[in-house]
Length: 181
Ligand SMILES: C[S@@+](CC[C@H](N)C(=O)[O-])C[C@H]1O[C@@H](n2cnc3c(N)ncnc32)[C@H](O)[C@@H]1O
Image (tube, rainbow, N blue to C red):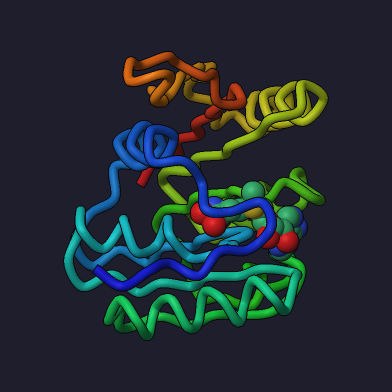
């Protein structure tokens, strides 16, 4: 396995990716939007769950776009477009989106609106700030697409004097929206 190039804020922890992608229900041939893609690891893992994806990975930071571009190349991930920009604007320019993972929550209501307008049947949002969580749940409910919210707390085993202690990871909220196909 190649080594993943990191960026500030990424990669998302594997336990959070596992739950998020399970809930996303990604399918063969989907158009997938990785919103606030950071390293691009979410897209890389998504390609292990579904074939023939068309991936649009986007981030407002040039460093993230560079890292994701290089990571896709190193991991042999094809059919990807990595786009620098504000996600709500980037999504508005896409023809359609089947499902989306939102890992960056700036302008989140505009991002959700853009994904809903493009017909996304499944949207997963990760958030760590309670104000964002409330904003996301309220907006999803207002748009009639709210599915569920879960709060994940994981601890990772670490060696301590030859034995194992567990250190807590940051808690993450996972919000899910579903739209009729
Ligand atoms: C927590 S990091 C994502 C980590 C990523 N899932 C990974 O595994 O590497 C959040 C990213 O979202 C980006 N971001 C936040 N809001 C955004 C927006 N509205 N449009 C584009 N990028 C955004 C940030 O620049 C940052 O790189």
